[in-house]
Length: 271
Image 1: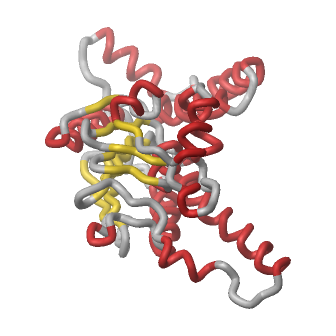
Image 2: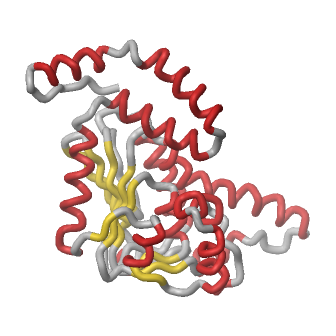
């Protein structure tokens, strides 16, 4: 498959896709083209079984400045009446939400590597990823209240479940204050802090490790962790039992067992 975009630079090697936000002169601000292309990119990745893990990074000085306010000012509905404006904006916001939900739903694990700054929509993006690495100097801000709106693309919905501290999420969202990578790690938003020069290398190395595992096992693990987040323990246990009643029949289980006994590295077919 080909991945050619205006706002993204995508490279695929060794089962790993590297998706780079690529508007460095605009601090990787998220314009309408970005939202469309990000959704298209991850929808395509989700059925590209040559890809087994994904790294998302940003080109330039920072990871992203968030929403491109000048570009998005054109989607308010013009001179339509209030009801029609609201109707169209509702569906437009759902389309934007779908861009990061497409990443969350793809069967391949996604590692986000942030540097410099991650503002507004960048935290929405991070919250939909599986693993989040950051460089030490990176700072974060849930910036939306400072531009007169509430975050509507995932931060308010996913972040409380990630960090387990609703009060602190409210503080960060109500004030839009900056917080450091060290605080983000303490909260649980950031998984690891890695020196900037090593950030991408470490992220790609982790993706390569994940890509070496059984894709059936990895996809099932991602699906069931995400399912458990949104359901009760009882419902989640039933779901994973149902999942494995089918997936345990894969030849990957036998291959992995044989490789372990023989002290070899198993090689697994793509999905």
